Image 1 (cartoon, rainbow, N blue to C red):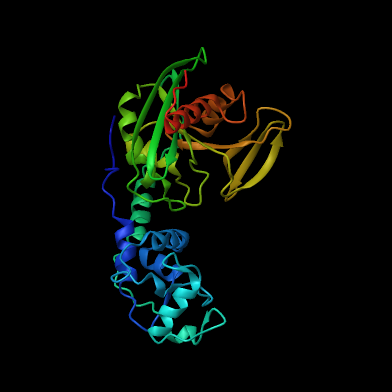
Image 2 (image 1 turned 60 degrees about the vertical axis):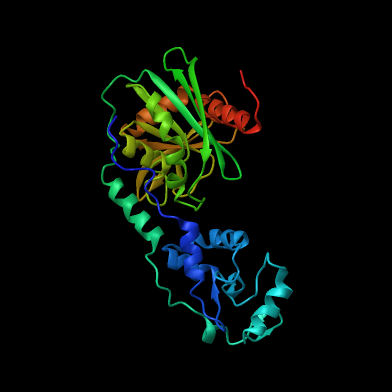
Length: 324
């Protein structure tokens, strides 16, 4: 198996967030969005709020100085909005009716930062150059479903392997560990690939990996199933329960094409009338037609059996029970 990227070589996003907020001077405020942009991507705004709620060092990291984009005070786990207002007023910030007065004048944006998320996005785009959506030339003999369940930041990853011909389960594996990278939309691969990397040792030649996440049906055209496939040089399929992008197009019974930029990027597949679809796309190393055919072979329920079974096993591990 060829490893093309080091999945554990990642920045400490929590510490980077705190380093950014620590730069906001007394008498000034910033916003969750400005901190996210200093991290390198506005999509991290919600994560910044989570990070502020976890802050244990309010002297070094003045989370009271982080407010909403319209100047509204927002929440404060250190004692609620009223305490946040009182602390800001003590620092010379004028607050009226739960909003910052002269907000634009005291808004702080001049952060010194290495933009770690922007670097990760650039890394994704470099990896994307190796993406292949051509036909898999070998013989597909197995399909492995992977899913991850969480208890806080404790992760339980399961891989369940099926024989393609018999459609029977042949192996299952479960590992657990701590997620070192936070959940930030479109950066899921950096959270989960380090967790599931040990499972890749059990993937045999001729195995297609189905992942509970997107392949090319993704705003970057490179979801977690694609990144996993490129990093480990494996044929992969993305199986998602939500449509992040693209438009539903030609409907062929229980199959509906999804188009992006005028081309077919994936399929909405349903196991029967009235059953919600899953959104299927190539991850890496195989064609769209192969991804669709492989998924349909295992589509007995809403979710194809390999990822459905992996979800059940991962959840059982999370609950500390056995699922035989």
